[in-house]
Image (tube, rainbow, N blue to C red; front, side, top):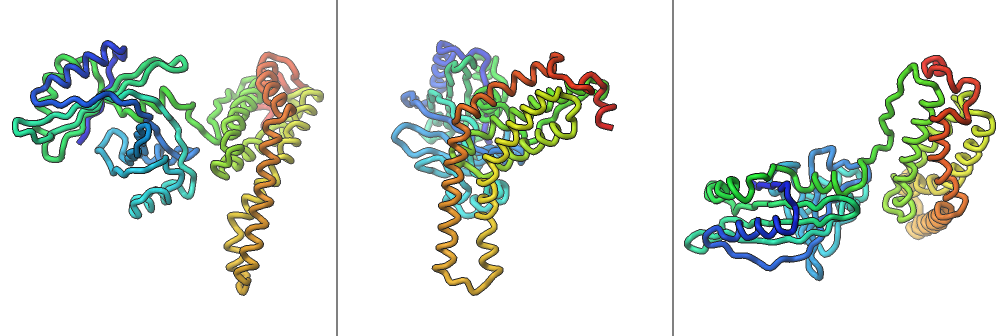
Length: 371
């Protein structure tokens, strides 16, 4: 059992008042405030969130972090200690838990979706015999980047002490926590401090009677965001799926440019076609080597009789070629030409939606153009 609440007033004064109220419960022990980082991990396509799970990590300066995998709005879950954030399920020290994460993540890298600095105040509740019955964590995340401050109270009852802890909480719920609402802290941090939810194939609503150029502008804008969202993962080599999603979005953009060629003017279409072709060529070699790297062990097994040193040499050659291709692509993504393309793309989308660069079929209803 675990209770989590968020308070409406997240000011420093409100935080101090809550800490004082919690610490005034009989036999309470208050610990010094500590700075920490609360991270929420998931795969790039949020497979854990889709499974209703939360993987959260609390890290303190110069100390081992505490990891927890649990269900959303549910029990405390399973905990373990780690020196650093786990990057793959194999980094989890518990074999059964690691196997479960591997099935869910399908070999995807675990990424910090959220990293929120917080100040944590911990209070221990004890009974008259000094037996610990609960730990209460008051967490405050200060205002940051335009996001407001957040204040949470998390109650962790000791096993078997839920009823006693609930009685202690009743008075707090009438006063200090009267304006609190039940939440999942990790989910609130994800929604307020994390990036927009990522979707490899964005849902773009297109009205059948809308001008075809307006619809094409909406598709270009949405799938352009997919490109930008995957850049960091490609450059930092976090997961091969970042490049895969990048190229899937790129392929969609090239297909629409060709299939709806009369929606844009010839000049605009020629510029778009050339820029997308350049990007396709820049990303192709690394993607081919990613596929080869994943398939190579199976190829070697299927061939049979390949000497171990020969297999190791071949694997090393593929790795060197892949590293070279990744550096070349990272250089391209940092180049002036790519930055110029990145600046021009949103402008093209806006202009196309506003009626510029339209071809012969640009004003025609979308339903007539795609039929």
